[in-house]
Image 1 (cartoon, rainbow, N blue to C red):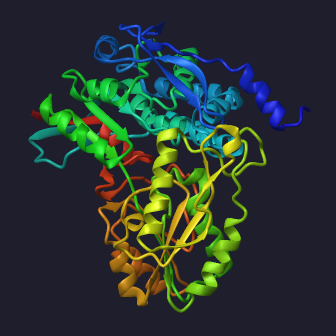
Image 2 (cartoon, one colour):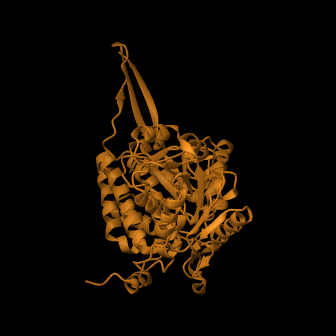
Image 3 (cartoon, rainbow, N blue to C red):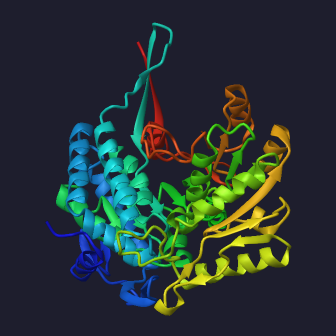
Length: 498
């Protein structure tokens, strides 16, 4: 058996299928304009490939193709059980090509190969298989009317769905949209982030191989302000689902109002509070979780535990444990299986993180570790794990989403102040509380304004049965679980007078 070392994955990378054209109607096509953009390897700063830069003309083609395919009924009118079997086969093909897809993720956005395999690919496979199995498990309703009538409540697919996904988890975020959208009979035009288009293009190829009819899944790589905007404004897109920044999410709301009032579902930014009470049942476990909550995936996680709220009684002791846990996270070559902290996705995000670190220093936060660029000799974009102590809720790094490995440590006195600080943000995606007092844990969890609350853990599972989404400016609508299927369908009432 070949040892899965750096050289092994470099070989996989060298032999990976790299698609650079748009995928529309089952065909590989250049952008109508002929324009391309560079996709960069963030671990080296080198160009991987030049990818078709789609814009309005390409989106028009893709949407027209998706509409024709949807109206034909080849997918929308297929028996749900058969659609489900095809999606399960799709999951099997993703599993068969798991290493290649993982390497494409690493090359595009710099995450460690071990995470790409264990988290991203396993998550993608599980998502597609779960929705394949769920395709024929959602039932319509008969309303409890007077016996003189029969009222049926049925769910019908929206039609054409535009899906705009981010670069931090390219395949998983795409799967969270594609799984329920395809399971309910829709056709999809997928726009991957310009930083990470390669795995989505390969995915489209596998979809057709699995038996998903050509035209059901179209992929248009391109820039957000061209291809993304064109999808948002398109009069024949019935629904737009988006994961990314809050600012861009607001643009899609505007585009919906300016066009056809298409349904919009948003999963946006976060500034998650990680609260450790004085009665935390296991300080060592909590400290390890606190480090992982901000340094996993280079901190490029919408739910990252970027605000660590510590009870003053245990603050000094606990912070020392977090500093010790942070030493485990070391920037390294992303294709090396031993690496647990990869590269920042691109030069722009890299500079943004370093700017936030400078701002924190100027505002008086106390730098305890990190705070600098790493592995600069590689030409890549690496940032050391960074922890600031002495942060107040008013400081910039406590308010704004950094999307990098930068932790803000904030003290509090008592439960009431912890809740107040945790909720003093425009975001509401996730939070956690550590306490051995079950009543306190429930009280705090109930008071926190966020879509997901963890108690005595941090993001422990990728369980598909639970919904995921936010409060406030973290967006609305839910990914994962059967609830996700609701946003890809319309409810129809048919009243029959007997």
